[in-house]
Length: 391
Image 1 (cartoon, rainbow, N blue to C red):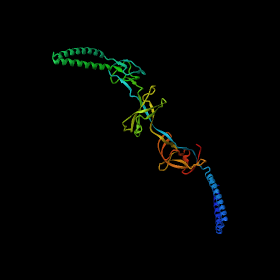
Image 2: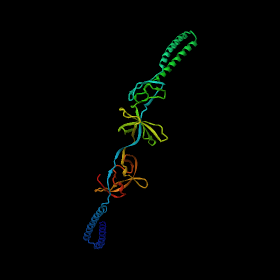
Image 3: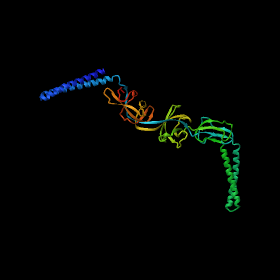
Image 4: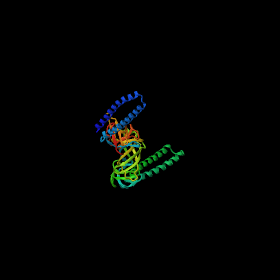
């Protein structure tokens, strides 16, 4: 069919040339005769022939376009670019930590006479948790208090005499030294006695009891119990140093706990000032609320930190981007779109930025309201006519 149409074009052109040759002879003769009426008549005839030829050429060109490309136009889908708000998130893993998670050790050697709490019990700061036998230390203090009282009375009398210049200064100084020494001695014994009482250092929950009542404990060696505060908790994570400029205090963070299937939104409350030379990272702390108490220390958390935002970004699917031999990224846009949804594919070099899931930000190369080929982009070439399916 294509060859037949081309042959028809050739015949039309040859016939036109033949007619033009004969016409030129006739025209020359008419012009020589000077008959204006005949010349005008010939002019109108030639214009009519010219219009017929032009109409025939248009029909043939349309037939050529329709026939030569029939069945060979790749089918594609397109989308129109638009400005969107783009939030990029750094996704990392962190662990739940609490600074109020400690094991209490015995500070005095002796028998654990009383354990006043049990596992799971809520306690308040300063509450007595356990008591160790003081081995007569309280009795020693009682005796010392009598001696301190006597030393105080002696010192006060000697001081009144010395103020009246009665007696020697040495006697006054000796009674003063004796009194102060006994005061210090009793303070030391009271400090030792205080070590026999185990108190809660902060509000929390008794997580584990290691020593039973009646067991013998040693200072700094015997674990008594673990106390944990589940209210004052945070997540600790290590961030690569490449994100130092974007991951700052106050940044919003989405925290997901896979085990609990729970997500909370919070902020970075502290950013470390030290880069670990072993893995080139720095630490951050993210405060979390735990009113229900279901978040436990060492629980794994997945963090999404908003490290980049662009309110007027152009986003396209990563799957439509290709690379040439020079490692330049490109996509295909459409141009010269016709009423029957046919258009020409045009390759455009682009520069891209950050990604989020299957989308990537385009920094340069295309603008908003650009029609880009989506489905079928891998099967076309530069300048090819494509058929656009309805979106």
